[in-house]
Length: 146
Image (cartoon, rainbow, N blue to C red; front, side):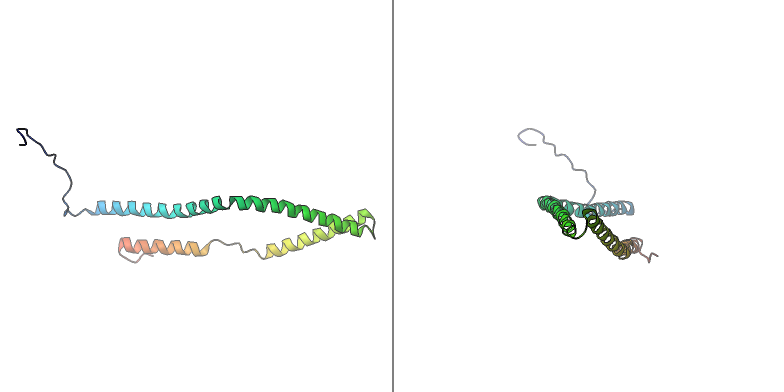
C-alpha cells in the first residue's frame, strides 16, 4: 500500500532464464538465422554493385560520347582511305577494295575471337557452394554427409 492506495505490480510473464529450449525451438532459431544470413549474403553484392553503378554513371556517359566520336573518326578514316585509293583507281573500285579488306579483317578477327571463347559454367562458385552444403550438413546432422 502506498498512501492508502493499493498498488499492483504487473507480473511479467516470461519463461525461466535457466529453462533449456527444446530441439524444435533450437532448430527453428537455427533455420531463421541461416535464412537471415543467406539473405544478407545475397543482398551484399546487389548493394555493392548498385553503389558502383551509381558512382560510375557520369563516367559511362562520357565514355558513350567518346565512343560516338571514335566511330565518326573511323568512318572518316575509311572515307580518307577510299579517297586516296581513288587517285589510282576509279572511285567505285577503291570503295570495293576497302569494303573487301574491312570485311576480311572483320571475319578474321571474329573467327579468332570465336576460337578463343571459353564457354563453361562458374565451376569455382559451384564447387564452393557444394562444399558449403556438405559442411552445413555435417555440422547440422553431426555426421559425414555425402
